[in-house]
Length: 253
Image (tube, rainbow, N blue to C red):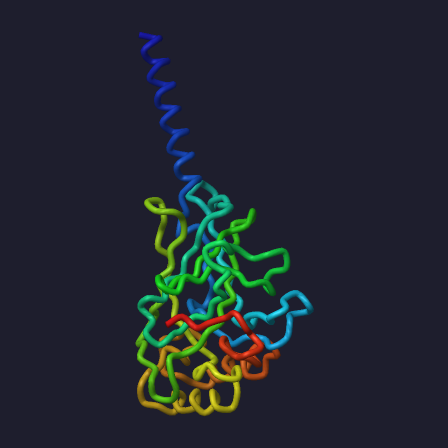
């Protein structure tokens, strides 16, 4: 009887250890830290290298956004390294992502100088951007691109970006994001023409998610204007994806 109890105890202990190991390998949405507010701010591109790091300039770091992915272990979870986090823009009809043909799939994570390097892998056919967490469980996104057109073409009505962390079948859904685009016409960076388009959204009676920079889900207002202006006056949104100076970069169809 004692031997049977000892064996049962060992089996139970093994089951607990296996369960704990399983929890440690799977992202936990409740334990993970997500950006606040739930909005991804898509900017233009710099026409000069960021502090000499990139020969082609880079995405506007005004829109930097960071996730910290943790597992389901007790005490708030432990950070998960090398965990993929994917932002899916396939539901965003008013967003065009910018990518370098060399970025995906070979380029998967920030280089040695984040956030100035090109974080994330842009997959145009899938309309996704994927990054991998570091040893602290953190992954940073800085995305460039724009809207599909000018004044009056905003079509999104809410959070169109779905987010998942982990590798299937052990991936989990994180909160969806609103996608706001500072460079509406994809020409010459964020400039006076884009200002006119933003103001049209500001004074419209309809809701334009592309100009909802505070992610409130409410009509575009002065708070959104203040955030948009940070792109207008940024030295990192003086160019657009397909400007000649950013050779090698293209807008996703």
